[in-house]
Image (cartoon, rainbow, N blue to C red):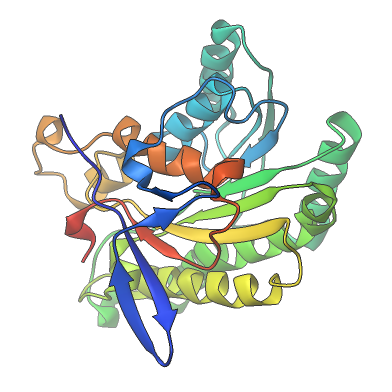
Length: 280
């Protein structure tokens, strides 16, 4: 049986230490053992960006199976419609499609999105920021300013702007969680990953800053998840020669994604959580 190896990077005194446990309100609990309970997200409304494929799609399906009403965000409507149909076939909860191109989105577009959520659903209890984009791997000297602007906009600026726009709804929730999917190459920047790695490193910084600013709000939390090596369309784009069936699949990570979105993780905020050893 496969197991998750989960690490939490915590600040103790003036130094960072890596510890391999997470606590809930009852006792020490490892995320890898968190069960996919059908009522874990009952009556909650969760927005998932990048929900059309890969980890975002699997998270949306998992959240729906566990009782949440899921808002499916993405750029390509046809992909979102396929996920919508899968959720509808479950017969457990509803889903809503909200397409939006993060590259061109402005504050007013996020405001419209939040207004629609408020009008149609009346609440928002969580956001999974999973949408990301990169052109491919290349040396810095071959990357352009326009490429960097696009990668910064989609991978870093859009999550900031969307979270900010959603904040009134999140504050109104009794228990709201924001989860950012991040990349190994942002945590440990590597040659040829350029603007993408810089943007992803910025996501980790954003999470730390936001978590500190939310310390006065016990109902709000935000964390980063680094999935590691997983068989996703984006991974196939950058590593086309890998043997896919030997890799972890998005469904293998869902205990982590469910735990962080559920009320059981309410004491955890500002953390970077690694799903695999390969993340180091």
